[in-house]
Length: 190
Image (cartoon, rainbow, N blue to C red; front, side, top):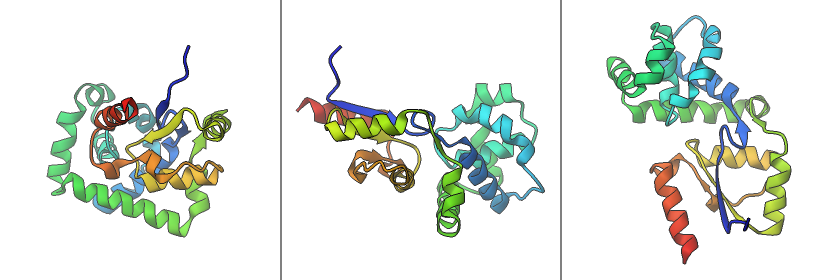
């Protein structure tokens, strides 16, 4: 099998297990909007339902659905139809929630970088493989993620992985992952 010229990887769930950070950031953001005594009892359900999340602002909304007692099966089957009314009922819009989420992460990074980093775990062998590819210069690596690229850059840097910021396509590119993949594919064909 011929080695690819480019390799585009997702970050969360492929390179790094960030579920604990997702949950903690979602909880902190949730508290700003709805407040709750404790959300820790919802962690396992949140982890199982994480695949319905397409972008970060939906994380606290998923917690809201769980607090309100929406069944897991309903969330898995109808997430889009559930999420939007929950946002509207709170008088919010997705941009506001996204900003709150990013601000929450920024504050956390500024006040407790070690704590934030500790909630991310790179899967076994990932760090070494990425470093091997980077040292060889082939394939050309890209990361496409729904996280802000700067957060991914910080996590990679802490692992000694020096991937250029131009190779990380985070939510700041403001387009679906599929569109980014098509652009990379078209550029590689040149």
